[in-house]
Each structure stands twice: as C-alpha cells, then as structure tokens.
Image 1: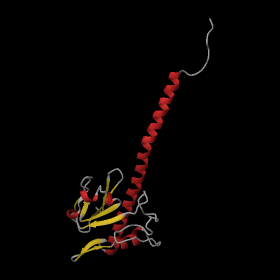
Image 2 (image 1 turned 180 degrees about the vertical axis):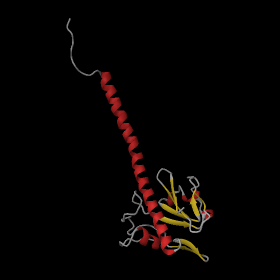
Image 3 (image 1 turned 180 degrees about the horizontal axis):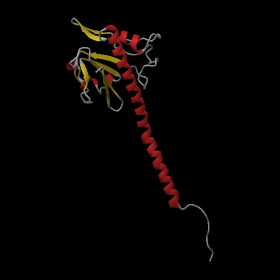
Length: 187
C-alpha cells in the first residue's frame, strides 16, 4: 500500500477562499459609493457654513440682510453677497439674476457643488411663503440654496424651518445628496 502524500489545497479550501474574497470585494463596492456621497455632502455642508458666515458678515457690515423688503419692494442682493463676501475680489462674479455662483457657465470657480454644478440662491420672505415640498426634492431646484427670512432651523428634515421672533434672523437650507437636508441659521 502506497501512501499518497501530495501537498495542495482541497477544492473546499479553494472555494472557501474565493467566497471570502468575493464577500470582501462586494463590501468594498457597496461601501465606496456611500463613502463618496458622504465626502460630497461634507463639502456641501462646509459650503453652506461658508454662505452662512458670508450672510452674517454682510448683515453686520450693511445693517441689513441681502434679501429684504424695502417698503413694498423685495430686494435680493445676490451679486453683492457673492462678489464681496463669498467669492472675494478675485474677478469671479455670479452669472445671472437667479444667483448662480458661476463666472463662465461651467462652474469654473472654487465655489460650486462637488458635482460641478452651480449653486443657486432663492430667498423667501418668511416661513409662511416657504413651501418645503416645492423647494426640497424637486429636480428643477437641484443645487438651490434657499434663504428664509424671519426663520430658524427646526431640526426636522421634513419641515426644516420655523418662524423666528427676532429681527434679522434667517435660515439657509440646502438639499444634500441622498435626500438629507442641511439647515443653518444665525441663531
């Protein structure tokens, strides 16, 4: 009787190693898009915090908000806010009257959404005029930064703002990737 002492792997060992490797690759391919989305949302939150600071600086230097009623006229000074307080005096200005942060139509400056699209401003007189269902979640308003006057953040993503009692209070709202909502205020 001869004894077979060949060394090697059994088919079960090979299948087990391939199954474990397959699971590891699957976990990486599932986790990678979520990680990338999280990084883009982190950048968006930083941009919104930058806007919040810019609006606060504008308000401190001009004794008024960039969006306000003067008599019966609704004033939206997106250009003054963007060129002086957000972009700076480096030649970049916003593109159009809707408040796009873009000098060339291709979001060439440093201040645009991580996907390359221009941010857009829309201001609302107060919470009563701000319709969350219209602004948040609709493709036509993608990359829209909503500034709501006389408002503060509520902590509720389905209804992110509530009325504020103090003069000069405002909230900035932006829909993040994946449906989450950023809300920042000057409270």
